[in-house]
Length: 541
Image 1 (cartoon, helix red, strand yellow):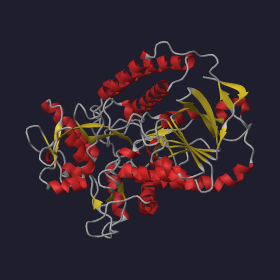
Image 2 (cartoon, rainbow, N blue to C red):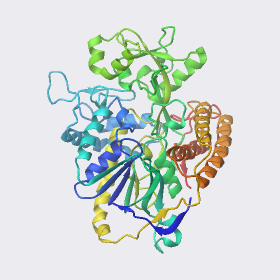
Image 3 (spheres, rainbow, N blue to C red):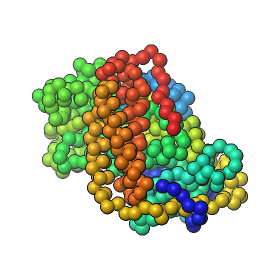
Image 4 (spheres, one colour):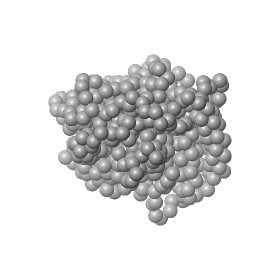
């Protein structure tokens, strides 16, 4: 797609934020006191991954806990690949983030009979109870609070059902760009789903908070919005990406024909849940001395191994030894959902399978959330800050969103005063004068299905060189078909999402092929040992 020399009526803001999860909403609220902010989200504002988070937010809150312990737990889970400075930065700023949410009115669960004392739970990989939560629906409660605050702010404009098409950079503008200086993001194009029109948005700063790319896999705990839009757009804009081979598969997704992507929280195992084979045999102790409290990659591989060895469709998570009142108090939403499907978790085990859950890699950023392109930031699951390494520690994701949202907005605020005085050049309009409506949109749905199936089969929990080569071959074929569609037909949300997913799939496969070892979430049968030195996988456009 090309741009014309004609100008559009751009929408001008101080900051553009793409995504309405915890990262995007936090950034918007922190900026909204002084600056004009636009939030673009491709579905309704509530439909991001953050609202699905059940477990909670990790932060050192108890007097018997310590920053050093939280850092050590994160480094261990990350299999030696976490960036120490980034890890310390997040851990040390986590309590401030919890306090901020308390000030906003998030109703965190408290200790029974101790008003004002937060209830802390423990999850796999943590050496102490440090998970602050709102029963088993933390993400939904936090999102609800932030959405209400954002909607009440006169300086925030919300654009729902607007899908990111591409970022506008000075390098892409060519002769229209400034004659010198680094490549800079100056705005973006977004598809208005209600009008099918591509609109132009302009701002000196853009924050990508679009979440991960779980929908690249056939089975995922992620919502339909998780199509890697920000990662793909940043790559096309000239940003490096890092550690894309590390896709976290959550060990316990509810296995039921009528349950789409329903997660059984890590906290169920944290409160004593045991994993059982269909025979009733407990199996985790023979895979790891930490048993059910081992990090997610260990538990997911153990389940995958047992399912393939025994030919089982699923395994079972049993917490029925706990009192029913305890289960209903700690896991009311999980209990209710299971009951709707005929499973009483107070008396019977829950059928579970692993599913793609979290993208540990992403757009490479520094501690201010800056990418390689000036004026472009990445926050949350879209970014690779170095915190998660080769495997994310449970409940470290939500706090990462808030810590880096604050870092990015502080840097932006320091720069905006001077930038607001400058008159920006009007950006070119999106040109669709030489394209037509697609006559065979079924090709998009078929390609989408093919992509997700071969990624599950060939680039899943256990990988081989042969499987990765097969995936790479199919990705190349899909990229050719999608490029033709993108060039000749009007863009649609389905086409844009497929284009982004195939780009992200390509990055995942290239990163996996570059890692000749098994580390954390990346397990290769051809390279089963872990190398002595931990080195990130960095790809450049």
